[in-house]
Length: 108
Image (cartoon, rainbow, N blue to C red; front, side):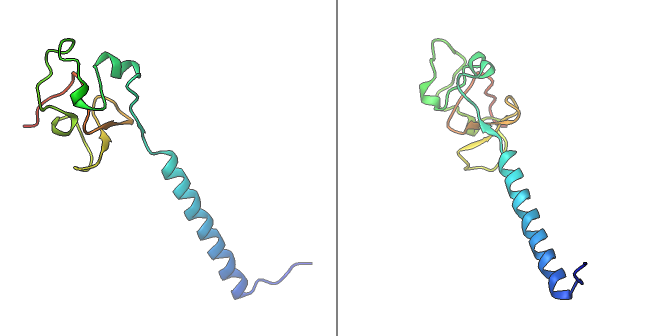
């Protein structure tokens, strides 16, 4: 026996489907969010990446300039003021704006 479809039943089904689709889209966007770059990542270690520019070993990285950080690097992307942002050197990962690595390039 088939239950006849009413306008009220159809609207309820559409609302439930829309809510489910919105929840699924939100879950996917959270899962796709880039992760923070780990200082122990092999590429990060090779470039001397640190989360705080004040922790740079100037003897090991003589190219380090006082006052340089990811925040004033030409390779940093994203919204100014955000504590973690994308960097061209580390695709798919976020770097600390207060950090530094030997790939630092001054903004022009």
